[in-house]
Image 1 (cartoon, helix red, strand yellow):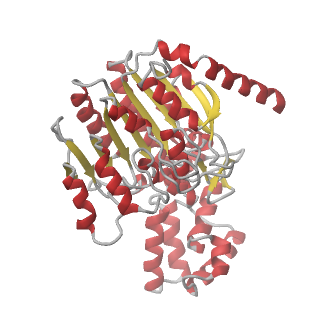
Image 2: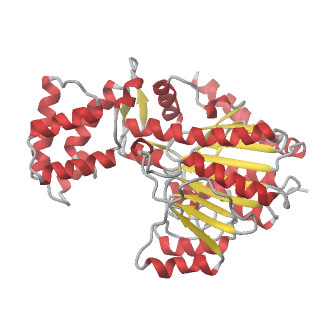
Image 3: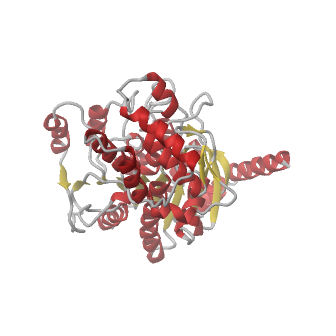
Amino acid sequence: MLKKILIVLVALNLFGCISLKEKVKHNNAKYVFLFIGDGMGSLQVVAAEKALGTKLWMNTLPVKALVSTSAYGGGITDSAAAATAFACGGKTKNRFLGLDHKGKSIESVAEMAKKLGWKVGIVSSVQLNHATPAGFYAHRPNRGMYNEIIQDLAVSNFDYFGGGSFSIKGKQEAVLKALEDNNYIMIDSPKKLMQLDPNKKYIVHSGMPYVIDRNENSGFSLADYTRLGIKHIYTGAGKTKGFFMMVEGGKIDWSCHSNDGGSLIHGVKALDNAVKVALDFYKKHPKSTTIIITADHETGGLSLLSKAKVVGLLKQKHSYAVMNSKLRKYKKEKYSFEKTLSLLQADYGIKEFSSEELKKLRKAWIIVKGMKKGKDKIKILYGAYNPLLFCVQGVFNERGGLKWSSRGHTASPVPLTAIGGGAKIFDGYYENTQIAHKLKSLIKPDAKK
């Protein structure tokens, strides 16, 4: 059976490659969206649908595919190598951005679009100089070169950046001056959807919390940043050939790294809300809009238990990050085990624990009480996570039908869905580098002539 499946997948891949030129010849793509769920494998999407009890917009699109995500050399990819693959079209080493494995710069689809006179927007729920967004404009040998990546952003000349703030090392003013020198207008903590001058370049940003932690004071959502970006670059695109926009749901990955089931569900839904904004635009321009949704890699090795009650994951009130901060406070104020556990139960909506679960939780509590930073044994047992919180979260996940095999990235293929002009070329099973080549063929259909 596996052999038959592989034969079919290879055939699909070959068909996509053979007929790519013919299909592109007939596309009318003028407005191109690429949505990326960082860490969002197939089962992350399934879990979100089961918990929410509704079909996600991203799963309603007619074109469906699977994408292989390995880095250069065949190893498990990080977000930098993956972003380089589907932004630039080349396999590279982990941590490399916009460079091939030998360190040579590769032009991204966004940079190509800008050169051709298209408007370009980059949106992310994490820092705008983080790995995935940076893959579309930066060319650096280390994703941790945050200040230098901002320098690349400053000279990109892209029209709109929206979402999280920046990671900056050292004095902020000196680093951000490059943005000002390149005529970027910075707007922080936006309160409402504003009108932007279509002839100017903007960076609209704020510190975006995990979606599960949002409240009335949280500011723009990912959908809001997407809507504002479309409004800005579409207005400007009236005098141009079109626009390209990349939108990343970055905290899906962070949730999966901490095996945080509740935050995962909310993160996927937030990305899907942003997809809905693009689909609303598509309805107005169906013949000239193309939308693609995929992921850079899967995180956490997620699987669903046979008797999954995933809807229970919606009982969770806060992200792992917020809960961990609370636990530090509980420890500092010397809360008892019983009081700490009752507070955790309330935040996760757990009514009671079994006697066996209580034994594990008490053991983890003892470790927390004596825990000091840098203890190798604790890192081996729990990773960089709080032992008590990780155990409570483990019980919560299992009761919600989730099982994690990892706290890192995996080699699992990721899903891709698409709709619009030329979208059929994304059908099949292929390497992540092909996404960039297919996108470039949409933006410049006569590239091979």
